[in-house]
Length: 258
Image (cartoon, rainbow, N blue to C red; front, side, top):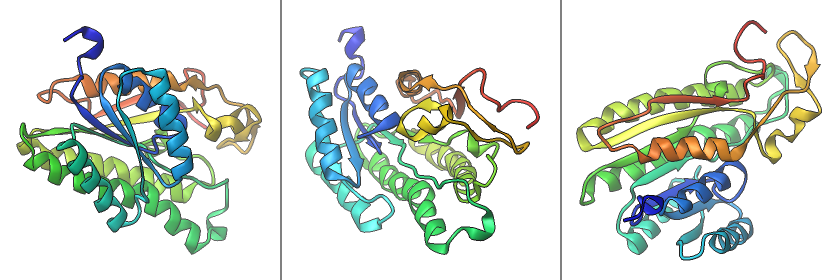
């Protein structure tokens, strides 16, 4: 097996894999030889991305499966499709997520709160639950789960209570998954990303609210740097694990006082 195809035969699922960071991660995994399933709610976006990724990586296998990860039945159907078509799962990247504009806590609607919890936390849990079942039962046993935590898993932005709460919770889920998966050769780690350049972070160039009340522009980093970090985490043997990694723009106002 060539170095460029060291993951040939391995099966990966990337949620939110059709756009932004998820698409960059999917492309990087395809370059490493993974078969990649990209999941998301918008079937048209997924199919377009799958066609583009296949064209960029001749000979690679990429499969688009529409799924609402906040819905248990939809997640069960997603993993049933993976089991039926590929027989196993070696890597789950829980990347799908959503946020809100900066809103005072007292003005956040119950519906918006529930929507963010459903995707960022419940969706990560449901996919992890199904992956654990599959990875415990398959032969050879085991696999790896990588969660997109965000630096909001450690430090909030102003007026971001729902997003921050879910990302802090993902950190706890990562640690619980790492512990509970350990006897079954299932490794779990988290990547906390600071300002990868995607459509979601385009507002950074226009200025975002800072903790001191000012509005300031923030630097970004190319999304492929995040994808390369995920590839490194995924490429370790299951006897080793990156429990937590932060990849961020060096000059962003994160380390230090706000």
